[in-house]
Length: 473
Image 1 (cartoon, one colour):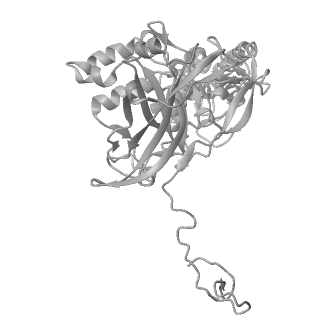
Image 2 (cartoon, one colour):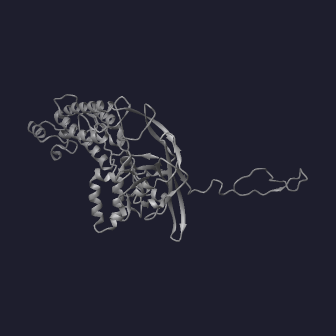
Image 3 (tube, rainbow, N blue to C red):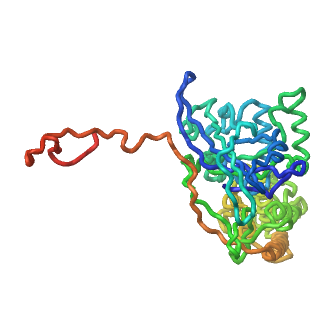
């Protein structure tokens, strides 16, 4: 089980974290037709100091609800997992309740969104049953009680099978976006989403509650999750697990420093902070007045530089000052736009032509950060550092050179801040929890071979096949 946050309590009682045992992908047929479904096996664990069921804790959690929700799209999933937009999981529930459906963008951007009737289920704690006798944990010095249940989410709406769905969802290699990824998230909460939504003005009340992020998170437990589909295929359970030097697992955000090492993110060294600071650093070089009607669409120099060039008769395409300003503006726009688009979840990558002679292929440098950063915000420092090579001037007498100096200083400062945090190392772990029960057995077409009596023995009960090969039809 993967988790996102530290333990959270409500009313002094620690909210139990739903543990995902396994997820079965199945196909069911009933009176309404045939549809794929996800069967999620869940458990809740409680601690107690004796063999009796901890009735006080159970009574305190009698109003507890457990939520199981699937989210599609690699950028949306990564934003939740990296805890950069942890509350997106709650807004996803709100949107499904408000609209009555879950929307997924189609492959044809001109077509209407794909609709999924319901991408979540709300389960009361009373649906869980005591699974077994408590087990004593020597390390904790307490007994562990386990309660289990299983829930199903059916694929209904525009499509009824995952194969049909994944054949029509939006993907873009250029943008680094794929809606062929699907993950299941689970959490327990003392907040009754469906109850609030059903009340008068319930959606507006829910919106107001959600906006108070720091208060609202106190209603909810740690979020657990499992990948179910990756690029349209059932996830094999092989993933990267971050470990500290003492071998313990670290499940938070990481930042890669310029020496190639990875470090735990902190409040002053994480993707959001670095992205916001980068935008501020590049702000003076972003969106200068657009004089493309005077000097061509390939350049965006300042008004003063353009006017000077026009007054002196200098060709604005060849002017060093204009070229440098144009390069700074284009690169600055691209960095800022890439970061902004990543934060908005579009993950759009941008290629920018920048060189001494804008408008020509001479000196052109292709610069793209977000295609690499999308889905991997840990790389933002290394990619910003790589972007420095695309700036055509190092002289602080030019706008491009000034931007180079400021961006280089910014990267160095952020790198030093990240290096002060503990190092972590990536390891590969395999924990297969996804069972694809849709496919027929590989021996489904097996046919019993014809046999004949064995003439080499007098035992009439012994039979053989003529060629001793048990083949498939």
